[in-house]
Length: 277
Image (tube, rainbow, N blue to C red):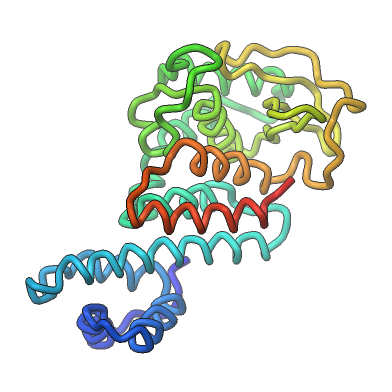
């Protein structure tokens, strides 16, 4: 995610070129930044005061666009690494498509405290049910996450930093938080897709589901969905399904009609095609 070493002289030159109207010049800058990674984008954000005043808005918009596209590329690279990867990294990159200024450390801070509380509360002797009960304690009791509205209410908060701050969300928002914290702690909690539309939150043991979890009802544990009712997909119980749920929620509930969100919409649509389960 960090890319190549950053040369500040080169970055200052590129920052100046981002005010250029020539698309060929801008494309060269974009491609170079994609190789350098987030550290280059972060440098641009931190040094916007070096941009001459008439060009500030143009440069800022170009930096945001580059950051969003870079985040898109980071997810593609993550998927190329295999079916198992560090899920919070993927969730961060998805978030940055809509919030291009978001630094990785800022995103990490929003979940690490809760995630570490969960890890500290578990041990190897616990059963799967006991581990989920600890997850429920951290999510609903210690950190006070609650369902915002009814089960069928439209999601008003879907970006993970906002969810972690407000500790309120719809079923999709709460399940995304649940997946992120479970993944951080190494728990095999994933979306389970039935033949009908929608998904369940399930605890997996390899290719089997041990039980389902009702995140809208304080994590109540219930019987597993019968396997004959599962959608046929090779991706059940894999990390990419978590990214798919989050990307779908951002696409459906997280966008407006601004220029940046139109770009985000295009990038999310492409990712949903790649992540399709």
